[in-house]
Image 1 (cartoon, one colour):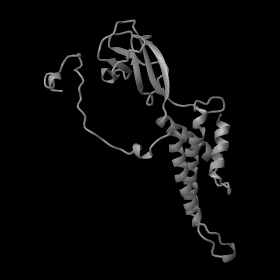
Image 2 (image 1 turned 60 degrees about the vertical axis):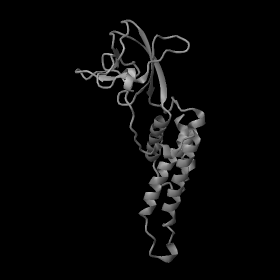
Image 3 (image 1 turned 45 degrees about the vertical axis):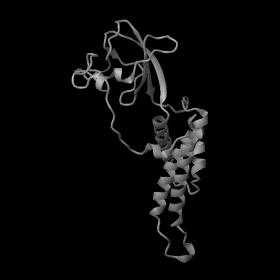
Image 4 (image 1 turned 90 degrees about the vertical axis):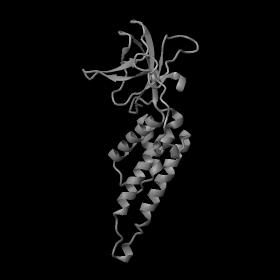
Length: 225
């Protein structure tokens, strides 16, 4: 639960001078859970009954500005599952500002579609959706955020003008910055991720979808693809 994450995160930071507040700790953990959700989305599946042939309502558990569709199965229950190709559906915003799922191929009214989509992870005093094996990586990311804060705090500390009271403040920012880097790597290693894979990139692809009526395109027919 949340208390386990709080204890482990502070142990990883080793803030001996207690420069960090409880709010700093909890904010870092919340941000780490958000980051984890981007790298390991939490799946949820719900059945939706079609009230129209090509525009389907979103599942009840859909989270606005967060959820994305992983798959749509119809008809439901076949082995192996019958999944629609991603190019055969998309999200649609109508004039009433209501988001729906637009299907390229019509379905019968009353048909059941099983929609798998992503939702946020939850972590509080009673709910924890993060697998036990990923608890330490998430705490490592939270601790890295806190070490970044400590590096910034200590970088603003100047050396005492009195030699007897002088403390080597210049080494503390470097120490916490190095610790933050190490903790981030532990996060990536714990999840089996390559941090270089998160770099932005782009490519050119050949778009082979049909038109909105499901017919072949006039200027880009299938025989030329």
